[in-house]
Amino acid sequence: MKKLLIFILLLIGIISAACSIGAVPPQDRASDLKPTEFETVNDLEGVSIKIKDGTVSSTGLTLVLENNSEKECIYSESYVLEEKINDQWYQVPVVIEGDYGFEDIGYELNPGDKREWEVNWEWLYGSLDKGEYRIIKDILDFRETGDFDTHYLAAEFAIN
Image 1 (cartoon, rainbow, N blue to C red):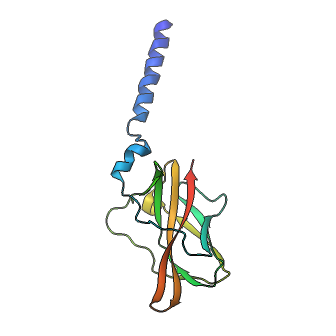
Image 2 (image 1 turned 30 degrees about the vertical axis):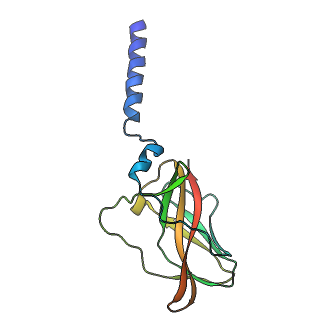
Image 3 (image 1 turned 180 degrees about the vertical axis):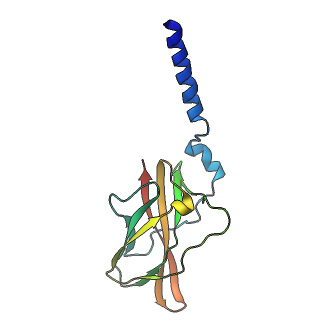
């Protein structure tokens, strides 16, 4: 009986060790990741994005874009995901090889508008691991053709 108990404990130890192989803590992965390219986010006064409650999953979420300014804004299908590691933001690597792109379409976000935008990133980033993340969308402060400023809006979320 004693030998069986020792054997079971050894087996559990071996299985536990095998399961942890390849599981790299986020702080150790940071050296392999590119740091954020976005020094300034959420600087378009009166225009914001937030995560719709209850929509976060490891493969997507729904954003709420809101324009409480007098500015005419335009946003597109493009976005970037970043992970927070040791209080620094890093780009989440894409899982597809080669080139990729987003549909080239502009959605108006007029003064007073509030829109929902659903994103599924599994095709581009795969399923996210447990951690702290943010999604970044570019939005144009549009005045007229050729006259606009590009801003970046970010919303943070967690995968548990």
